[in-house]
Length: 315
Length: 254
Image 1 (spheres, rainbow over the protein chains, first blue to last red):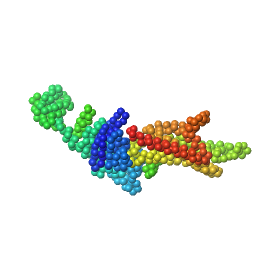
Image 2: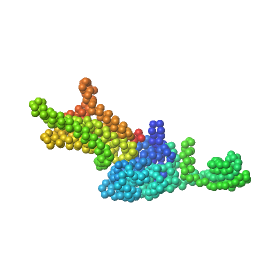
Image 3: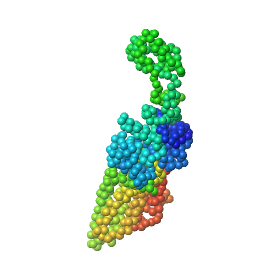
Image 4: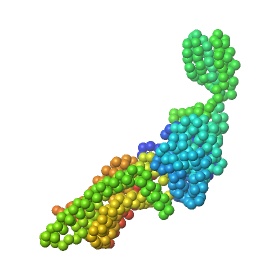
C-alpha cells in the first residue's frame, strides 16, 4: 500500500531524512518510532505530498507522490501533530468543509459527517465551536477530519501527544478500531503505545532507518544477552561487591543501578547462552552478604529502542 | 472550480463570524459617511453661490460623486491590508495550511479562493458607499453611469491591492508584518505617478504607468478604457500567479 524507496530530505547544512526505505502492507498498523527530531514528521509530510523529497520516490496506493500528488492526496487522511482546526467554526461545519475539500458532496457528505462524528465520539459537540473544545475533543475532531473521505491510508503524527491518560486510552481504542479498513502509519515516541497498537515498527534515528520489523521480532532480536537484576545487602562499599560479581564466570558486564548504605542493586549482563544466576547467588552467599533479589530483567521495547538509537548515535 | 468556491465560502464566513468584518465596515461607514457629508456640504455651499449668479453650472456627478469615489480609494488603501493580512499568515501560524495543502486541491484553487473571499469582503464594504450615494437620488437626478463605472474601477483597483496583499500574506507567518508590508507597497503603488510632476524621462513614465491612481481617473469620469482594465486585470493575475508560485516554493524550502 505504501512503498518508500530511498527517500532523502536535505536542507542547507542539514539532512532531515537520509535514504529511508520501507513498505507497508494493506490493512497494517505501523508504528513510526524515533526520538524527537529524528525525521518522523518530515517523512510523513513527504508521504502526504506536503513537501517533496530531495531524492528517492514514494508510492501510496500505487501513485507516485511527485507525479500524481492529487491522486495520492485523495487516498490519504492526515492528522498533523497539531490538529488543523479552525477555531471559529462549529464542529459539524468544520467536518463539512474538510469533506468538501476532499471531494465529497451532497447526501454523501452529510452521511459521512454523521458517520465519522459517531465513530470518533464527537457527535455530542457537533454544534459547538472548535475553540471551545477540550484538547481530547480537538484531537478526536482532528481524527474525524482525517477519515472523512474514507481514505485507504491514514497518517497520524503523534495522535496521543498532550492528552490525559483516559483520552490516550480512548484514542488508542479508536485507532485500533480503524485498522483493517485503513492502512495506518502513526508516529509516536511513547513506546508502550506501539506495543499495544502496532503490528510493525519502523524505527528511525537522526534521519536514518535503524530497524523495521514486527514488535515481537524486534524484542527477540535484542534478547541476545540476558540481563539479571541483583540486589545485595551488606555493610561494605559497593566497589568490592561489583568487582566480585564481575569475576563470576560468564558475566560480561556489571552495572551499578542504585546504592544505599547497606544495599546495592546491580544489572548484570551475561555472555550469550550462559546461565549465571546460580553462580552469582553462590558468589554473594560465599562472601557472607545477603542476597535479597535475583530476577530476570526482560527487555522492554523501550530498551530495544534505546539500544538501537544509542548505537546509531555513537556511530 | 468547486474547490475555489468551497475555500471562498470559508473565507467569507471567517470574516463574518469574527469581529473583523463588522469593525472594518463600521470604520468605513463612519469615514466614508463623513467624506460624503463634506462633499455634499461643499456642493450646497456652491449652489447657493450659483443662485446668486456666481460660479459655473452645477453638476452633482462632478462635484459630489467623483470626489466621493476618489476618496473611497484612499480609505481602501488603509482597509485592504487589514482584509488580506490574515489570509495566509493566520493559517500558517495555526497549522491549518497543512490541511489545505494535503487536500486534493490545486495550489491556484487555494489562492484564487482566498482572494475571491477577500474581494467579497471588500465588496460588502464598498456597498456602504452605494448607500451614501443613493441618498443623492432622493433629492436630485445624478447620472448613474459614472457611478457604475466608478464602482467597477474601485473593484478592479481593490482587486489589485488585494492580490498584492494576498501575496505578501503568504510570505510571512506574522499578520502584523503582512499588514504593514501590504500597506507600504499599496501606498507606493498609489503614488508612483508623482514622479511625472518633476521628471519626464522614460523611467518616470514607466513608474507612472504602474501607478494605480493614474488608471482610476477614467473610471471616475464614467469612461471604461480597455487600457486601464487590462492594466488592473494583469496586476491581479500577476499577483495571484506569484502567490501560487510562492505557495509551491514553501514546500521546496520546507
